[in-house]
Image (cartoon, rainbow, N blue to C red):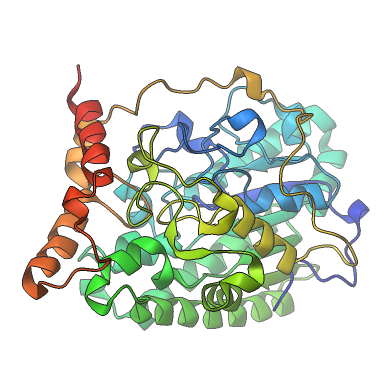
Length: 421
């Protein structure tokens, strides 16, 4: 397994800031400030965060990049670039451009109208201009050069795009699509290198076919992982590793490593008790089978102890799973992992975050794309899952979803919020 940075040269003083590009696994709240249904700035998201504040993180608590930042002696969280509560004074030590629901493919970003990777690059350039005004050109260039640039995306290109919509899958084979994505990764890394980035940690794909929502869709196989999706993730990771080797050779002064989380993810699923988990097949929120984003809301029953679950919702890992991921891909030698829960002394202005009293109101987007994010829409769920249930007359899990109570409550909330004036 590769660490995010080679432990032979990394010390606390080596990293000036943590700069994040990616999707919902590292989005610390940018989607709160764009028009999309891909949001999580409402309860129960953030229930184990500082004072239980939902910040837009798709987790019950912190994200892996938050733990990475703390591990380098930097602030305990990485703030979202679009959050007006923060200024360049906060961004000096870290900034997040990530957007839930996005991918390498521009088509993926368009599905939920989120921030594309090219737009994240534009924000990065804007950030550099702000940094130069704040620190001066010489110091700002040094900050960028010594910053750890974390890149984490690609899952949505398969979950909500290739294996869901007939656009790319009708044009390209899986291998061709992987090559297409890798070419975008290559161009992106070279662009941020030209802008001064020299330390890059890029996170590979996990076993995406084993997330709860995909296992729910695969109920006819009794909830087993969708191996065609895992195979695609494996192929992507292999070619990503090849690209990393090429980039390290061709780009002078670049230190880029691949964080391999695939085998770790499978091991957690195969040996949950070894990691302290009791449930790895469902999320903590609601039934844990399909709830994510606005389907995981204040009316969704939530498990008592999220630390026992490897997934918080039907797509995203729990804070504890993120913590394990960060600890196993340690960027610092001979250290203990940072504490799981942040102290109440976190400095960023969370007291100014407004928690929505109701769900987001996007009726057009909901009616067009469904009621969720990262690979699950209500239309897809109904056409694929329930059609298959009707065809096979076999149910997994062994209870009636329609009359389980949770499903009807969630869809009632979605419909109410969608059509209210």
